[in-house]
Amino acid sequence: MIVSILFLSIVLIILTGIPVGIGLGVVGLGFSLIFEGQSAFISLPQTIFSSNNSFLLTAIPMFILMSEILRRANVTEILFDAVTKLVGHLPGGLAVSTVITCAIGASITGSSVANAASMSIVAAPSMISRGYERKFTYGLIAASGTLGILIPPSIPMLLYASITEESIGKLFISGIVPGLLLVSLLCAYVILKEKFFDNSDRKIEKASFGARLNSLKKALPALILPIIVVGGIYAGFFTPTEAAGVGVFFAFVLGFFWYRTLNLLDIIPIFKDSLHSTCMILLLIAGSMVLGHAITTLQISDQLVSMVSAYDVSKVIFIILIMILLFVLGCILEVISVIYIVLPVLYPIVMELGINSIWFAIIFIVNMEIALITPPLGMNLYVIGGISKRPISEIMLGSVPFVVIFLFFLLLLILFPGISTIFVR
Image 1 (cartoon, rainbow, N blue to C red):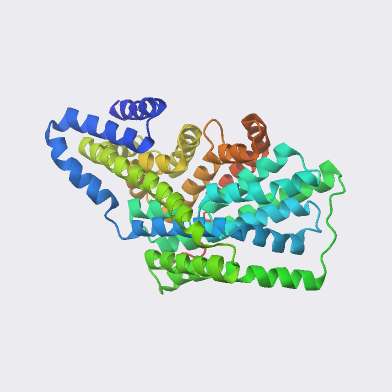
Image 2 (image 1 turned 60 degrees about the vertical axis):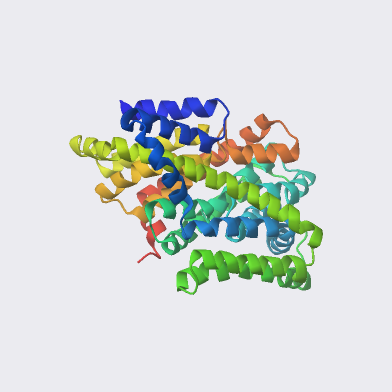
């Protein structure tokens, strides 16, 4: 009963339109006052301070800054040109190039929204001019953009690690194979659709070997960046925070000295946008920790663990129910809010049932990918709509086939857990 009232309170206060982080904090403080009295005010400052007093979380501003530098340096355009010269001659070549570029962009930025926004500017005009349907184009970019939270470095994975104290290196490495599998599924869909359903002659002339080599040489420094960041973490050379710092330095070198697409006037906008995104995430973390304090006080996690044990719910049934819950929440809340609302409650049950926590992290993240492209609050849909100036309904319709592909992909991960844990010792 208390759990239902708690979740209902969260939904109602978020519907008022106030920032989600503040809304979570208000609900948490309200419940703490009811059950603890005025002593709830005593613990409030310490809870807020400790919520962001984490060495791991210091990586988030750095990864956001790295993403913003690369976005403004037009690295996505350089990558898209290189990939198009390599695979553009295939059936559905431009669409395949879009998926692959999004995958590479994901390994550089760690942000789905940044990924989708960049590709809306770079790839959408080329695809539409080649005769691709608008709704298919925008749906593909929205879906491919979500790779930013599955392929490392992923900001939601960092948040997951900060809550659960899982190894961020293991989380990052476990996202690689599922990420590549999802890229393969999206490319297969695009190619099959082009060959057997569209029957359109949209092939691009095959680039010469010299043109391919030159574009690859130009893109190579950007391709090295994710290897340095993720490889350095997994090999033990860097902590996640140190890796993020190295990534920022490397991104600055690329933007200002290698590609020379940035100048001194870009520095202030880069830091301003990065600060805005960082503050939004840290406010969400602070609010969710206040809510988490209330959840701990009410012993909601313990009650749910007892209930699951009492009803003898199997692992499979539990996972299916959680996937349904996450799908519904993903339709009405944005990704970071879902992570901080439900993960502190679910994780103890995952541990109690003996479920592999790394595998659970990956299927959790895939659910968040689906959340990014499902109405009414799919963030990627609105980002693309804002950039393209097209009706949001058109972009939503275009994303429907890709939601089906993602659900099929999620089923594969549930049936074959080894896909997620193959590299995790």
